[in-house]
Image 1 (cartoon, one colour):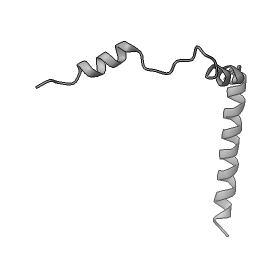
Image 2 (cartoon, rainbow, N blue to C red):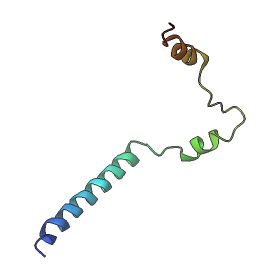
Image 3 (cartoon, rainbow, N blue to C red):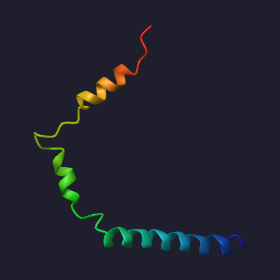
Image 4 (tube, rainbow, N blue to C red):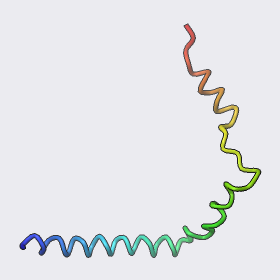
Length: 65
């Protein structure tokens, strides 16, 4: 039962830190446009293929023997 004397304050501190992080995220507009990113993947213009120059860098780094 003595462990509750440690666990309760620790859980309250962690909860307070989580709440402070949430309010910080709200204040700095981290959640400004949640629908924009979700809908962007559904559009026709969305392309998740790697860029051509990224692929050439990967293949050129392979040593040929």
